[in-house]
Image (cartoon, rainbow, N blue to C red):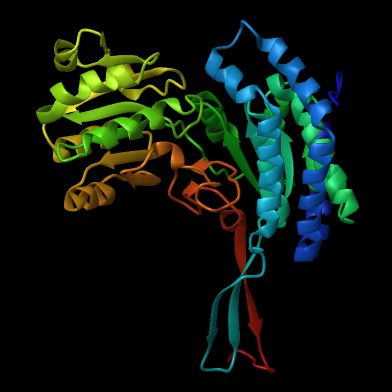
Length: 420
């Protein structure tokens, strides 16, 4: 429920206090209890299918004609998508509990036994934009990993998020767990984001999931540690030794399966020696996608539009892609390294040695060989779901699932030792 005329800082602090208390209770919950909460939440989502569809219709109608089709696609829910959300909760319930894992165990000469074990992070602030399923995925992953979560979704998905959170809280209550394990910010006031970023007394980690503007805001203003998810300027490189028919299918899927996801290919890099064969076939296959090429590729096929310098660093999230020609894999590596956002990049080739060199050289969170970049997804990695794709290099990288939402502590077992 959206609240107006409230003290934003007081509101966020109250959510933080409730979340901290709930996180402590959740840290003592059994795996069975957490799994039951997830299963009951999935059942509640299905039971409220019509409510959620009606709420989502309001959200979509509120931005119709104001936002691009790719934005609407990310916002829109269908019966199949809601079923997918519910199924993801059940899949997460079936995954091993990441809490309590023994990460190391060693004995010291003085007789001390030392364990390093996985523990929850605590309270996580999740700030995201238009995709309502992110709220469900984040809630489920946090719940299973023993963390409380405060959701701050985009104002465009306000009605959808409210129903999803209510369903999660229903599941928690039926499993005997505190409803405040999952909460949502009750105001669309933008100051609430700043207040959440400053609430380091209660919030242990902030994860932004959205465009570069949101991520930069979080990076610049947060007093709370952050796990950043930058934009997905992803590349697919077609090497001279690629199976061209295979390459065309992979790139078509990588770009057009869903254009609004962060793992969608935005730039296609092609070896010059095969460009005259590949480019016309790509254009024929990728009907409805505006392809923008460098000067040389435009000369090969006039159906291409001329690319500008800005295109090489743009995450379109739309039916647009750029094409760049290179001499060989070495030039491709240099080009991708310069322009990639570090999310996901792929090489398509039948030359395994070249592929291995590309996989080692490209310093992105996910690097692929002969596969669509749209496989860069926690669900596809067997994580059940993901809370985002981390493009940094500390703590977690790539799809952030259950294990990445834990920290660790040391347990030291003695028998009366004192230190000399």
